[in-house]
Every structure is written in C-alpha cells, then in structure tokens.
Image 1: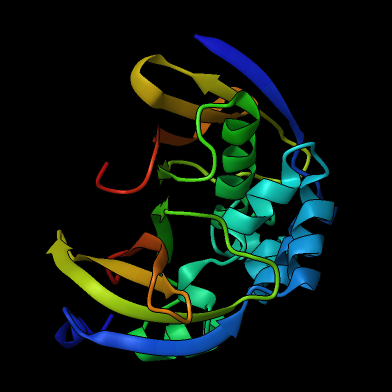
Image 2: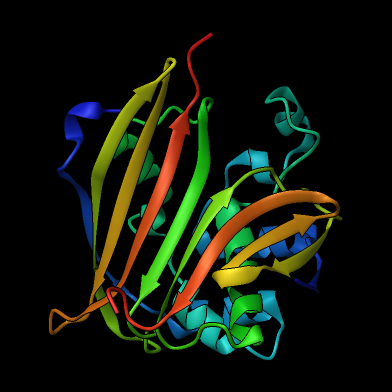
Length: 114
Length: 129
C-alpha cells in the first residue's frame, strides 16, 4: 500500500470548480447554509474530489488515455483538509481527507469492456 | 425523484469541450498531468445541460439529495473544442427504507457517433422525516 499527498482542498479550488461546473449550490460556499444542513462547514463538490483522485491516478500511471474509474463517496471534504491517495491491491484505492476515508474506488485501464 | 422516468431519457444537449474550460480545470488542478485529466474529467454528466435543468428533469429534492457514487468510463480524452452530444438517462431506481436511489447515466458521443465516454452517477434522496 502506498500513500501520496494530493495537497489541501482549498476554498479557491471549490470556487473555481463551481464556476467550471456551474454548480452554485450554497452548500459549497456558505458555511451557515451548510451547518443548517447538518454539515460542519461548506463542503467540496463530490465530482471535484473525484477529479482530484483521477488526476492522481493518472499521475501514478495506473490509467491513461482509456480507462474506468468507479468511486463511492463516503464522507464530505471540507476546506482546509489535506487529501491523500492510498493505493491498494488490484486497482483499489481510497482518498483520505485527513484521517477520514472520503472516497473509495477502483481503477482499470483500457477501453470499457476490454 | 421521478421514478416513472426509470429507463427513459432525461435530457440531451449539444455541447463543446471548450478549451477555456479545459484551461480552468488545468489551473484548478495545477499538476503535471492536469492537461490529460481535464480532457477526461471535463464534464460532470448530470450538469451538462445545466444543473438546474437536471434537478428539474429528475425531480431531485436538493434538501435530501446526496451524491453517493460516480463512475467515468472513457475510450479517449475529449479533444479541445470538439463538439459533443450528451444524453442523460435514469437507468436505475430503487427504494430502500424510505430512501430513494437513482443511477443516472450520461453518454457522450462525438459527431460521428463514436462513444467517447460514459458516466454513471448514483444519487440518494434520504427518507422524509
């Protein structure tokens, strides 16, 4: 098993992603709104965490121009949390936010169905 | 969630893999592999026609909705500025202990009909309290 730091999930990244995805749900930038929804603060978009994981998997060379990444989102990621990728056997991986498993998934290379 | 839509097309949209948006994702990721990653992770299927259009089409209650899973299966990266046809389907719907679980499939086609990418996104609507 190997762990690789993916850096900090910053509010800047969240705001930039909101612009790209055109997803301005206040749960991603308004702490008060997020707390009323039972969250500790504003949270990162789930697809942003997936995107960060995908980038790390490509950097690790486990997937490239064709592949499949399947993820399950297990816990929200909040601004300021450090993310890390934990590669496991057989293409399985986790993304940790601090000590918490935020995302778990599998990766395989090649075109779908191959 | 509108369970009667199971198996049906929710939305379709003619979109473009805008190089400007690719650049925005590259800047966000700020990594050596960001260019490749941006060309794969450019779109989040459910929001290709605008997030509001998707929410309205599927009848998602945002106060109870959670993103539970997301899969990307790609045959190649998107080319900068290429035209893409996106189609969204509600491929699966189940109920469990009052919660509703829906799987939305987004299919991305090139102009020649080639399948570039397929995404499967799982949403959960928590039970009404």
